[in-house]
Amino acid sequence: MIFATLLLLAPVAIHASPLANAATACLSSASVPQIQSTDSSWSRTIKPFNLRLPYTPIAVAYPTTVPQVQAAVLCGAQLNLTVTPKSGGHSYASHGLGGEDGHLVIDMRQFKEVTVDKTTQIATVGVGARLGNVAQSLYSQGQRAFSHGTCPGVGVGGHVVGGGYGYSSRTKGLASDALVEAEIVLANGTFTTASATNNPELFWALRGAGSSFGVITRMKFQTFAAPTNNIVFSYGLNVNAQSMKNAFAVLQDYANSTAMPAEMNMRVFINRGSVSLMGVFYGTQSAFQTAISPVLSKIGNPGGQVQQKGWIDALTGYAYMSLSTPLDYDVHETFFSKSLMTERLDDTAMTAFWNYWYNTARANSRDWYLIVDLHGGQSSAITKLGQDYSSYAHRKALIKYEFYDRVNSGSYPSNGLSFLNGWVDTITNSMKSTQFGMYINYADPTLSTTQAQNSYWLGNYAKLANIKKEVDPANLFSNPQAVGRVQV
Ligand SMILES: Cc1cc2nc3c(=O)[nH]c(=O)nc-3n(C[C@H](O)[C@H](O)[C@H](O)COP(=O)(O)OP(=O)(O)OC[C@H]3O[C@@H](n4cnc5c(N)ncnc54)[C@H](O)[C@@H]3O)c2cc1C
Ligand SMILES: *[C@@H]1O[C@H](CO)[C@@H](O)[C@H](O)[C@H]1NC(C)=O
Ligand SMILES: *[C@@H]1O[C@H](CO)[C@@H](O)[C@H](O)[C@H]1NC(C)=O
Ligand SMILES: *[C@@H]1O[C@H](CO)[C@@H](O)[C@H](O)[C@H]1NC(C)=O
Image (cartoon, rainbow, N blue to C red; front, side, top):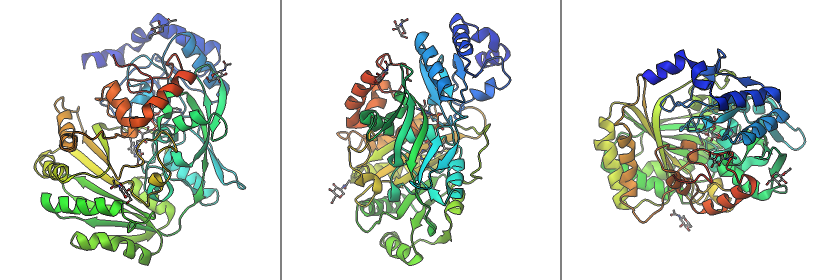
């Protein structure tokens, strides 16, 4: 804490290293706008979404044009710095700041236009645009949409390069599945595009591991007509460990059966006080009843709420806040999070998992939650695209888990990590021969470099490492969990 205080009182002394001065001078002489440690907006600029993980960049470029991004990348290369693009700054591991001190951060916030081509219905989106603003803008330009996550403040850049999962992903695929082209500045300063026809291997890499390959400036997405019938549902599960395990077994079977249509998007949301089954179905009320009834009848027909909403209303409901996000959006939490992507859990794993919830998690008074998404299965658009579609490695995962443990004031306890680690261990220790996947958009900074590379990218890692050697042999774009980073 003493160190933090010094940082606040003496930013000039801390940042006036010869290398920092050289970075600032290089950016200035190339006319790249920057935010400097002496500027009043500096501390807010480098304030991470996850306050548990603050890092200090050596310099922050704040470009508005592609040539400025190119110049910033070349400054980084010239000075042998590590360069990190930041879009919405929502990385759970503060990877938008580099995940460690000393990076040249390229803050892409000002690349935020959203335009829809009326003929092709392809949207061009600046990487700094936030998901809520993107959704509103697409809707206002002809009621268009693409599939993406629920939090309106998340930046499209970081979201899409990790995959991008949300309440229409089972129906329409991941956000990155809708990507048809990325405009990108490479490590040698070249500005180019990646698509199915231009730089196809790079395009494959960008959709799942894109934070290690360059600075994407704009993305083009194939949009769809926003659904008009959005059936939003929530059922309360009033349960014990045994009944929850049974319900989970039902959901696991359902996720991989044709009884669960692609139009059904569903999750179990658990916190200290409640367990609910919630989601969105795209279609009529009666089609919804047909689709949900096999689940409800097997879990004791719980009471719930079913509403029909419009697209924007449904998104707003799940955002739990306004979709409109200002440029200087300033929301933060203090937390530790982990993820797991699983195929079929066996009986031992399910028992251990739900016992941990019942006995350990419910006794933890911090503001934790767990989201269990029915991600894959036979009818899921994510699974259907097939294992080779992009570097996103989890197409076969039936279920996606996001474990999130936060404090609402003060600092996160130093012994806190064991709570979620222990919960994940209930599965991994029960099924020791399985290599479980993890989702980089819920980056877990406690994983070693090698663990992270193996669990984020599974069997795709070797191919990613080869592409990395081609386009960024000097590891200009890197962080402690990036493709190509060598474990120390
Ligand atoms: C409240 C909240 C809710 C969330 N909900 C969801 C959800 O529903 N579904 C889901 O899938 N995820 C969700 N996430 C996770 C989110 O998708 C990731 O944290 C994502 O990486 C954030 O992107 P960003 O641009 O905001 O972050 P940043 O921290 O700016 O970037 C994240 C990573 O992407 C890289 N990157 C950023 N911009 C670029 C670029 N232009 N070119 C290349 N690399 C780039 C960064 O270097 C960094 O490694 C949520 C996160 C939060 C905090
Ligand atoms: C650049 O930095 C890396 C590690 O940070 C070091 O191994 C390498 O020798 C440096 N190269 C130059 C030209 O300074
Ligand atoms: C899902 O069903 C398909 C088709 O029956 C099968 O091949 C696959 O192994 C199943 N996946 C899981 C995780 O059970
Ligand atoms: C920059 O790197 C890319 C990817 O490796 C390569 O195709 C291109 O030829 C390089 N450009 C220059 C000018 O060296």
